[in-house]
Image 1 (cartoon, rainbow, N blue to C red):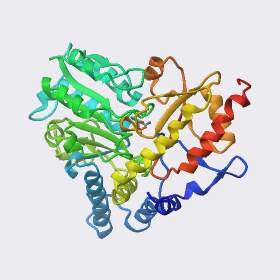
Image 2: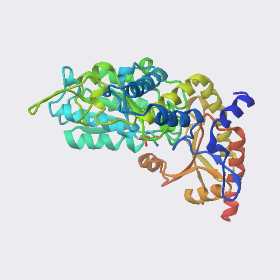
Image 3: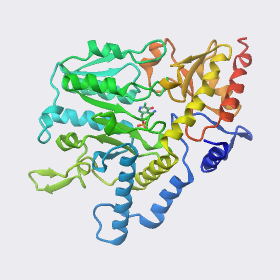
Image 4: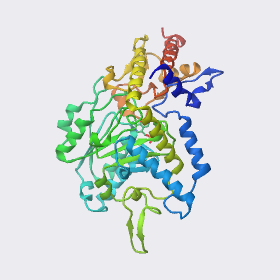
Length: 422
Ligand code: PMP
């Protein structure tokens, strides 16, 4: 971005203009947890409630028609943004719900449910599911639970000292019993980008399904799910300048067709008698009950807004921010966890400060108006791998400026002095 373009982007985000801690300008470096929202997204939700609010897919009246149109246009926008067909996008409450949807659909398939082609989704005891040590709990615990329900066995590949996935281990860990490989596109701790094509190739060799946690990639990189060739992907609106309470599951059309439903009830059926029910085709089959329509509309606008900015440009801007963030490695006592090569990562930088607990680091930064996240970031195994219980994490988004990072670095320079470690 030019300075002018970035200023225009920032001016669109009302929250960035507020102050904290007695009048300090807010330096928001917690976008990996959740991003801020531009006016267009906020206005889209208000406009929906003011002008188009009605139940979708049922009403016979004009407002219901307009609500349905807005809801489906949002699906089109999200699909176009990630290189998918609209029929392959299922609304969920977020990435966590999307991954759980897949795991419960696989267990229902394992109980014999599902349409033609559902054999591919059935697990039997001794089948294997492969994940990585870098996963967010949202892409780990649901697989552990699926294993507990089906008798499948969880296997995993590790990470190296730089936080890069040990993909060479796929040759050993992926076997002809592997039925699913679930992995994150970008780590929410190290910022490392996974080589998706290597995982997809390993899965194809043995006929396994691939499930991509795209939570931290979709907001920051151009993502084309058809080109990546994954079977499923999950992402959340709230990390991509959209509203909370909505996200999406992408599934390849024929897999969604074969998948049994998980949540059942209204709006996902064709014919219901007292004895039996037939289900609607996807995506409606997976959207039981009244949906989060206003939020979906907001997510569509967020996708469109990012798409119009251009994800190549967004990624280039954030690479510049990542380079600035990584300079904290020169601050005495600071150790960055994750790859240093900018081609391998995004602008999510976790770090420890020798002799100071991450929570204390967070507090000192907060006193200076700098918002970072501290803790295990829902990735306890990865923190265990690095021998730390907690890290502090600074993370950027499309609106993050070099000035934000400079303010952060200056605040960080004071941390060890503050605690008398130096
Ligand atoms: N995966 C990753 C990599 C994430 O960063 C997050 C959010 N921290 C999730 C999954 C879960 O997303 P949500 O909480 O929006 O469901």
